[in-house]
Length: 287
View 1 (spheres, rainbow, N blue to C red):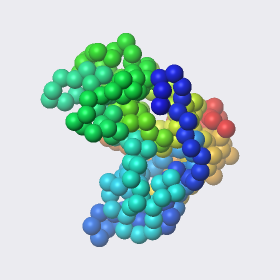
View 2: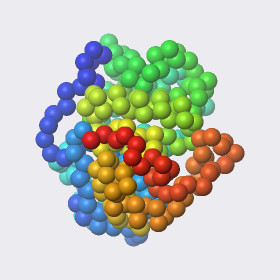
View 3: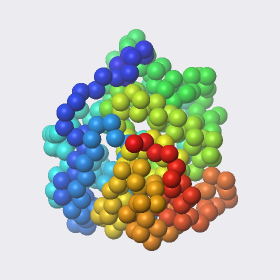
View 4: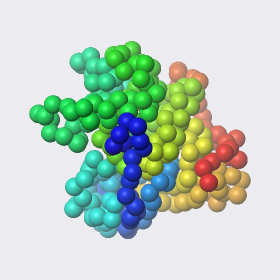
């Protein structure tokens, strides 16, 4: 996203993310143990698994937010401890709102993401403003750019968070439950936003409990249980009756009880498994 008119030109080379026999934990306790995972440029990977399986810990470890206690994490071919271009990996946390104590507009929130690429005391340049404008356009919120984020729906606020991450021009975007707790229309809007990022050549790693809204853009599904990777399949296989993940995934029924069903704001609906509605099997997925 180096220009408002042209998609970013990302360099080719090593895998963007590699976990090599990696253990990640807190204190002396390893939550994730001996995990190996490679994500190549341009992939859209769903990381699925039940509560407590280690999905978020894997993400926190590769982002440097949780200690790696064994093995190695490599980012763009560089050991994580020696990787200094952190702006190349954008992070969209699992948050339901962007509303803070001080009222902020969409443009102000998105512009704050640009601080990853410039010193905070330096005024924004024309190039900075152009990148912020493109980020807002990519997520489809141009008409709301001067609106207070407090007036937006939950789905729109998720898109503001994505735009804020995009303001740093990342090559990889890591998202934690971007579609959780939003209605069907908002989930579809989010998927359209992510499809634009894929068209721009970005790599996506998405922690999710329901791949149904993401099925059109996914290239892989990686299943995690008990702190280990227990399955890794191309999306076209994982979302089909031929999936070898079916036995493992559907043997652990139930959505995350902390996530509300889109059509039932009063409480979560029982779910059939990590991949959500079994009816999505056979749904279109990226090849």
